Length: 254
Length: 378
Ligand SMILES: Cc1cc2nc3c(=O)[nH]c(=O)nc-3n(C[C@H](O)[C@H](O)[C@H](O)COP(=O)(O)OP(=O)(O)OC[C@H]3O[C@@H](n4cnc5c(N)ncnc54)[C@H](O)[C@@H]3O)c2cc1C
Image (cartoon, rainbow over all chains, first blue to last red; front, side, top):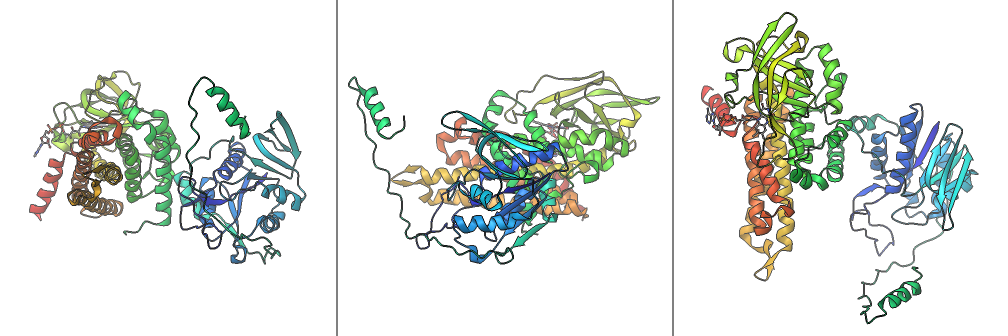
């Protein structure tokens, strides 16, 4: 079986993340770049399939600047077999529509049985990309799973909704997206780290993919989140509980 | 030589992640409860830390001595006790890889490299510490077996290890009469003393190893008769570099905590860091640790290449690094004032843990003895 995992390089959530007010884009210098934790869990899922069946081929794919190669190497050191890096300066600032169509072009001929992505990322977050890629490639999408069972013939899983649990399944090829409920990623071992350089990474530009899609949305303005204001204080004169309930209800928290 | 390669940067990053997640959060509790976390050691083994410089064909990670020093420094930032135990374990695994035959490699190294089986290095005796060549544990050949009798003192990992590498006397010819043996746990006649109560290093056991008519097959002899002292000393060259690296890691952690603390703590109307006397203390810690690190890297390089001055450089590096690490930790305690004396701040544990690095793997007096003798013989 061949599994392609979509990984995304994001600023480390443990550090301060900064948007450049001039461009509205991420200031990549401001924090360390790491593999998005959810896509790391996606990779872990793929690697756990490989643990059980060594013939499984795991490919990681990402679109991102030159530094994103570091994340690909990290994934290779954890156990992925090869990488696909969509790298094109023309794609800087790409919106969802362009990203989805370029990534879909890169994934189309991989011959993968299964694509695994995170349900959303920890930086710019729309949670739409996997669905858009599924649409481009005409594949079934099992989104936002909390558990998955990947067998030789098909993939099935569970999705938690507000009303209950859905059991979903699809024959290959298919796309699944995982949530934070999946296992944390493993550490790469020394052999993995030292062997990662010898694993192949293909670098593809938008032109090579025959997709030089126009970026049709742009950020007009970025403004700083206003500083926190002092919260409301409830003094308990006998009906604090009721006030608390009202407060939560008015914010639709209960 | 002074720039890490991309691979080394990745290795340090991984070890730091592992240590931050799986060791640091528990270090204080392990110290308090005297808990030896063999499960976490097995995780470290899975990542390749059980045989860092054991050759790949023997099941090790096949990395360099400098890689090892970087790894031990990083582990020790989280917990000097665990880092130091892993360093002793690696010394044992390397000795078997280097001086063992194919059967011994196949029998012992897979378990040691994965750290499913732990190793103990058994040289010191109640009556022979610094003067290790005076050891009196006996090994007598009896047909296809050796019979061992004697007591080893201060043995790290004892009681939990699977493999005891024992230096014993096969002839009354001083250091030339010493032979190395592999004694597996569970051998009849092998027993352990009570857990020693110690100042630090509480997360790893220290016990006597007692041998009463312990019979082991001749095939468990490492190298030829009479080569044991040389094997033990060669193991210690690496041990000294690694324990030095552990001291630097502990000292660096203490320094980092001190910088953060002095920036935050205010007295006399401003942060303490603006007191030049304290800034200078920070500068001296930084200078001494970096000097020691440079020395450790140089010794690791000599060891890797097997240069003529390996013994001298390893001894120097051990003396410099274990003193620098302890001094930095002790200064850090002072800089934290009363809070440094409280367990909660994590500084006093570093002081307690690093103190013993100046005593073991050859005390720092013995390091001076080695360096001094070589200096005047030149
Ligand atoms: C926690 C702990 C763990 C240990 N783990 C191990 C282990 O796993 N395996 C193992 O084999 N050993 C281990 N040791 C033993 C350690 O290596 C010895 O304690 C050390 O070698 C010193 O020996 P000693 O304690 O007998 O002191 P002694 O040799 O009696 O020395 C006492 C003092 O005299 C000094 N001294 C001795 N001779 C000279 C000299 N010629 N010139 C100047 N000064 C001298 C010493 O430096 C020391 O300060 C451990 C010790 C401790 C405390």
